[in-house]
Image 1 (cartoon, rainbow, N blue to C red):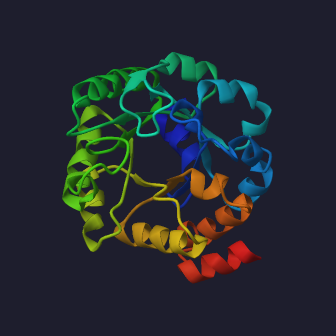
Image 2: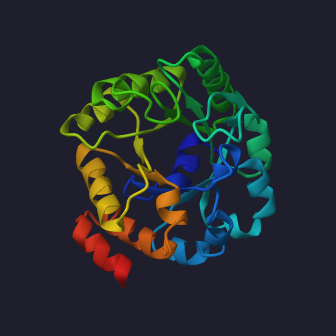
Amino acid sequence: MSKTRRMSHIFASDGKSITLALDGFYFSTKTAGIDDTIAQLPKMIENGLDAVIVTYGMAKTYENALTQVGMIVRADMSTGIFDSNVPDTAGLITVEDALKLGADGVIAMTFPGAANEAASHQVARELAREADKWDMTLICETLPYGYTVTNKASNQPDVIAAGARLGTELGADIIKTRFSGESGDARIIRNAQRPVLALGGPKANHILDYFRFVEHCMDAGAKGVAVGRNVTENENPAGVVAGLNVIIHGNGSAEEAYEAFQS
């Protein structure tokens, strides 16, 4: 199977993607809602969901539930599962492991500017080499200075843009990264030279605030989102996906997305 064919399982025919991140078990004990959300996948797919990011174990446990959606398998995990700041990561699975699961892609983090950046880049580079060998899609999740926003620079568009380009230079086919919410976020897209999925963003107090953030990311040039807790921790996960579908695949506004969410 070619990378083009695998990419078509992650992105819809318009070149955009609503990707649901369900891989929190590799990084935190704060995983409420993930298992319950999987039970709603059929409705979410109906509402526009394109792909999911899962752990190796989830791909096996929920094999039947994942047959109708693009599947990306997380290839790295936190070295400190009880530290929600994710102090470091380590490579976990190979591209061949993901192929045996029927995956359409693999994903790993890199931490440009952090003390552990060299190790994270090495994991991504080795995956890129394997991914090219097997025509597997590789997503680099490029997070300047660490997993969370740790300092002012880590959330600045020019810094995020530099990190995104580094992921491309390491061999990524897709970049997943944070957006600052500022007008300068368009630099991230220009610099990446690859399709960019906006990291889910901070947990919103109101879903309309999240939809406004997503609208901003799409206006900046993102090709979609890779979102976790803003879906899994919402009381209406399928409604959130319906709202995202309005913005991402329908080119609608945040207010229109909110109407879809409510209905």
